[in-house]
Image (tube, rainbow, N blue to C red; front, side, top):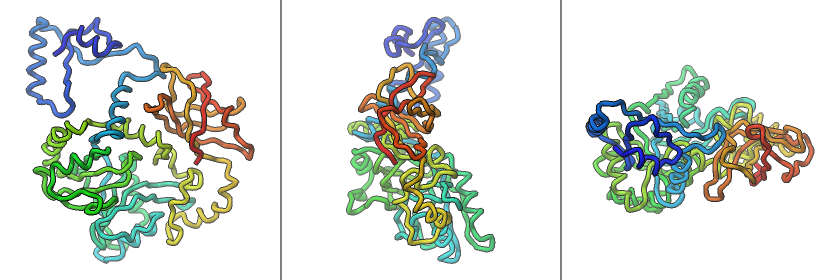
Length: 409
């Protein structure tokens, strides 16, 4: 328990006039419920039995920087400079298998825009399209055996991914798709020091030659045995990192040991807002925001990542669009808000204006903490006319702010 004076020193915007005490946990991680009860009882006794409140309010405006922005900045810095741990358990995790050694592979080949016939123990990041070439699913496919694959999807796509695969498989096939996420926790270990931290907890070599990017191994880590270890080239745009698939009964002990081992390497927890922030900073379109069923790879500049040497759903539509792509009026752009104030930053949905005309809208926003300004992703319609960047603005809370296109997809 800390005093109201100490709380005001730590959080200047906090209103303490109607509070009696503050419960503060200085270290991130797990806190004992017994300790919480003891502190609450002690605090209540000190306040002669008066009620202790935990919530607080700030005097910030609706469109301004929230009080937790400093935490996001520190989390992004850890991911960029040291090491960060993020809970990815909300990811969808499926196992696709067939008794016939070729059926499961043939199904994924027909759905995915990349070649899924990869070596056993390797992974590939890919997408699934609909008949008009629009995005339905983004996922990571991991090959565990000739006829068995793991599919890892973003949290918002869990149900849709299972449905999309089930709808497109032959009802007479022996392919099964099983949701195995409920028995598994997923930890993401990100940042330049991630390998050093993990190496302290295992006898197996994690060096590049022994454990290349986009490959999988089953290893022992600390007291956790037979972990599925994925060395991935991409975790939500954060760069290379590690995904650990851990049994639920082992994850708490493993997490605590990771945090204690990583202290000397600058480890800290990381949340989803920071993870999304890094992706948007880099101008990477995200499924469900920019990548939706009506948007094709040509609209977002991702057509070069598609393998046209194979057949997949949506290929014919993309080939029809290929010759028209150069004349397409719709473009995904990566924008920097040149001038801003802390009481008015973009949150998504803002209109993009050129010479007084609305030509598009913002889909995703973030704050580039290194450069100190907001960044956005959004679509604009050029209608065959050149868009002069120095005359672009976005409307934030009925105020116009100039923007600059830093990456035109």
